[in-house]
Image (cartoon, rainbow, N blue to C red; front, side):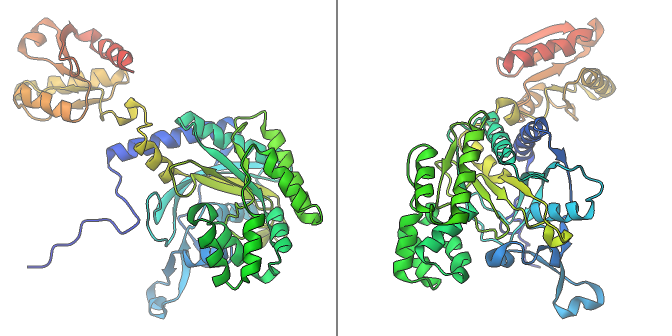
Length: 449
């Protein structure tokens, strides 16, 4: 007898059962609604791209996490890859803008909600296959773009019920200025940023060790940690400190000034009071050129999402730069935190149906289906119990599926033209005219919400 095959999905992936899908659809619905109110339009791209489209866009660390697809057919034996699964939604967007530049508006704002794949080590809230919810605005260098994006993302989280999130904000020019001030050679900047990006996750001592392991002298690593130390307080305190540290560094000083503009513009938006300028925020992706941002919540190691300005990325495809700024919300992490905190509305965690029609006997099957059709026409979600079991079994099944109401039509009810509606929570059973059954159930549901 052959060994029994494992039924578990591959590591870092999950099966989504009905309750999981309902939670995900709830979050996506909120995200889509907010993004569209901010004028963003929908876009979708293929699950895989030509491998050269993705390689070299995410830095050395990112390149290692790309899922490559081997050549097929007669070329399969070479072991070479010509395609790769989508790593994020930003690089495919850049390709789309370059491909359709003459068909898109001058200021193109899009949102995209699709899965991406990364050959990462699975952990709490970290998966190899996961959805991203992106917004990006193309065509303008104005800090109004950053302020709008931070506002939209903040409004999404507030609408979902988050009240303790923080928007961490920094600037790549400020980062470069601090690294150069600390004495890190240009060749070591990428390595230093990868290590510094972990400061909030592994702490200063571990980051110092990683910096030295990456070839940065111990005294330079110590100065880095001193310069990149986060200063508590409002957004202005770290800004003042940055401005002082970078006053002799032209590009860094300009970055600090841009951060001050963004903070000021965001004061009148949904991001007001949420922004914390954090000099240690690095974000490892190599394509960022300006402001960078992340969303943090207290009980999650990692962020709920991040983004920034990337004015040079599209130029890799187009041959000329188009300014762009974007943000990606991590749908899976949001769902993990919301589930742990019991943040989902009762309706989302509810059953698959509003009402279940019982089956009195086999002769009543056609009438049960007819009643279900009448109830569905009113917009109710209706399930029909498929077998003529004892009513107790049918009630038990409805209860196990969290169906709030059960409709019963026995021989007597059919003769009188009525339906008995049983409230599964209270146990109360009410006889109503069949024509009024849908309205009666709807009122019951309204009282529950």
